[in-house]
Every structure is written in structure tokens, then in C-alpha cells.
Image 1 (cartoon, rainbow, N blue to C red):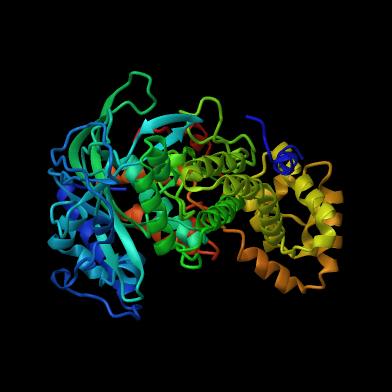
Image 2: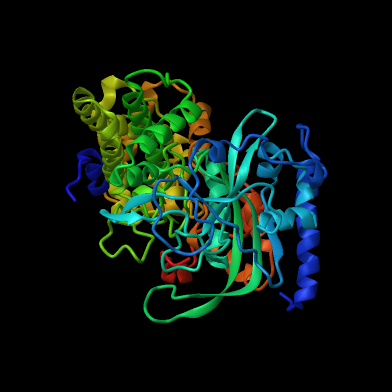
Length: 571
């Protein structure tokens, strides 16, 4: 694919064994410990009894769109509807609550986190207790550049909408809850390894300040689920799990694509108007130009989301149009990865043989996906508006470049100034080129540039403790670059404290590295949830120095064994 981002391309170049019963007791007491600690800090009115809690009286999606008339649950082609009514299939064997997000329970669902320890909550989070008609969503999508036709919620069931005391509406989904009409050749289940990754990353991204879906709970079981992890013929039996996840909306670009492709134009119009009126409040839904305003907003917000991804080294792994939210939030965590050594070609997904969704190409893929959104909206546009839509789409390139430059300058403690654009581009390009050449750690290089006073950044002032910066300082351009950086920094007349404060609040010290996630997975698969909950708490404060995280090596060079880890689309 021809890159539209010459600027980005320039930057890229430039213990004791315990029985299962003992572990179960330990896990319950641990969850109680974490839950009760956070409960002490609640300031909102919350429900202490799950029986007193309920979904929104008005379930908007059920009332606003046609639901497929066929109620039997089998894989099929679906038309003339947005949802199918599908009952989740609960897990059966040794179902355990592995983790909850106290923040989601209390701040979004208005639940006292201790409610999570009740059988009623576990039944709800596992699909055994239904409070309204559950739905699976019909959508299509372009996968790895090609139209794939009908896709849909193949392993997800929406179990209702909730409106909290702030008036915020959220859609609750169970991921891994069994077969739906959209499961294609799958079984609708999810395994522990993928579910742990989704639970941890959803919450980690939120605390990094990146728009994302959220995860409320993780249930694990002994239900057998057969998977061929790397599609190489080596099938093995794993264990089933369910994540209760939330988003203000799960509508995605593919939600509109399937209707446009099927020529269901009235439904396309109704769905687009619904999305605008409920999620884009600044747009007048009666305006003749509302679809252009909608496209313009999604273009800008998608650019913003991807810039935020790039700023922390996050690589989604499967940037298909069916995985791109219309609300520009990060959804559908699969074979993602946080880049460690700076490598523009970083691809976390072993299923992506051609590297289509590499770190460097994510901005280009954003453009590709937005173009598919523009095409899906075309049946709703006049000839004049179709031309304007193309112009709006082309504006993405400059929007992205400007947002990228602003945020990467902030990562260096600097402020965007239009008069300095050329020099600032050079400053960032040279730094990334040095990082690429030396394979310096992306996260810790930026972090350590902010942890040291600027007059200590010369190579002779860097101790082994600053391991990432130590590696970068071996580059032949390092001394000259530091001089450029100092000169640029002094222009702003910020104090050193101000520079460092900006950088420490912009560059995380802790991210969900692949090896950390894998370590959690291995323990959860042994029914030990202690580490999962410890890691979850650490990732809630990614910008703060934490003794526990340091002791666990979360800010140290990744272990050698981690280089052999692989993830794929299999989940």
C-alpha cells in the first residue's frame, strides 16, 4: 500500500504448590482485599445489593431498530435488521470470578464493588441471569484490505443498556458467551489467554488516557475450548472465559458498511441518524449537512485516537473496519502489542504475514478505514456532498500530522509552535532514527529523558539505572541531538521542574508489556488470580513510580525469554 504519511515515514527512517480449593479461597480473600480497599474511597451513591440494581428502563437499541425475526440460534446470513436476539450460553464447569474493575463497577455501573462477590453478579456477568432481551449485532467489514461481507458479533452478546447516575448510557456485552448467528466457523467462545489480555488492556488503556471500551469483570471456567493458536495444525484444549465489557456504543464502521453493501438504504439512514443524535450531540440531526459533519468529526477523532496509540507504542494488530469504532474508541482487543524496542515495522500479530497493520502503518490504515466510512455514507449524500466528503477525508493527513507533532513534542516537554514546525519535525525524526538504530526501548527512552535533569543528559551523566537512555547514548548522533534538544527547550523558558513534570505526566513508566500479560495468563490458567489483580492495580497508575512495580521488573529491560512470545488472531 502506498503510504500517504511521508512525515511518519521520515520519522520511522530517521512458591508453594496449592490445591485448587486452597487457591479458590486465596482468590476470594484477595478479591475481597482489593474490592474493600477501593470501596473505602467511594464518593458516589452506589448499590450495595445487586437485587436493587437494574438496567435502563428504556432499552434504546431494542426500541429503535428491527430485530431479526428468526429466534433460533444457528449460523446464517441475516438481512433487513441491525440485531439478532441471542441468548448467551453460560459457562458450566468450575466458574470463578478472576477479577473485577472496581472503577467500572462503582463509577460506571453505580455498584458497590463488593457486589461482585455475590452469586447474583457472577450469574449476570456469565450470562446466566438475564434482565432484558440479549442481542448480537450484525455488521460487515474490510479485513486486511478486502471486503468480507457479513461478520457480526460472533462471540459477543449485548445483555442490556445501563444509564448511570451521571446520565451516561453504556452498552454491556459478554465476550465469549457462545454461538451466535454471526459465529461463522467459530464456536462463540473465548479462552483464558485472550480474555486476560482484553481485561487488562481495556483498563490499562483507560488509565493511559486513551479512548477505549472498558472491562468490568473476568470469569474463568474449566469448560474445554479447542484452539489452533498459530493455525499450524497444533490444536489443543484450553479453558473458556467470559469478559463483561462496556462501551457507550459498539457501533463500528462495518455497522454502516453492511447496510450500504446490501442496499438497505433506509436502515442505513436510520442507523446513521441514530448514531448522530445519540453520540454526536453537537451535530444538528435535522441539518442537511449532518452526514458531512459526522464524517468530519469521526475523521478528526480517529486521527486523535491513532496519535494516542502511536504515543505509547500501542499496536492494535487487527485494524479492520469492523474493529474501528464510530465513536473513535479502541475496541476489540485481540493480538495487540505495546512496542518495546523502537521498530516502525513492529507487528504483534503473527497472523499478519504482510505487516499490513504494523505500528508505522496504523495512520495509513486509519485513512483507508475512514475512506470506507465515506463510501458507506455515499448513498445518503448529494453529488455536491460526495465531493465535499472526499475533501473532508483528505484533511485527515494534515490533522494527523499536526496532532502527532503536538503530542510527540509534549513527550519531550515542549510546546507546539507553528514557527518551529520544520525544526521540530527534524528534532523528533532524528530521535526516532537513533532509537531505531540502537533498538532503544520506546517507553523507557521517553520516560528517562524526563526523569533526568536536562544538564545530566550528556552521555557521561547517564548511569546504568537509566538503561534505555544508556543504550540510546551510544549512537553517534546522540551528543549533537542533546544539544539541539537543550537549545529548543531553553527557547520555551520553562523551568526544569515544569519540563520534567510535563514529561512524567505524558510518558508512562509502566505499560502492559507482552511478557507481563503472559506471566499473568500462566498463573490464571493455574487458578491463581493474585498476580492478575496486582498487575491490574499497578496499571491503574502508569505515570507514577511504584515500588511494587519496580520489584516486579516492570520498568526494567524485558527478560530474554519474552522475545520468543507470539500472539495471533486465535482467541
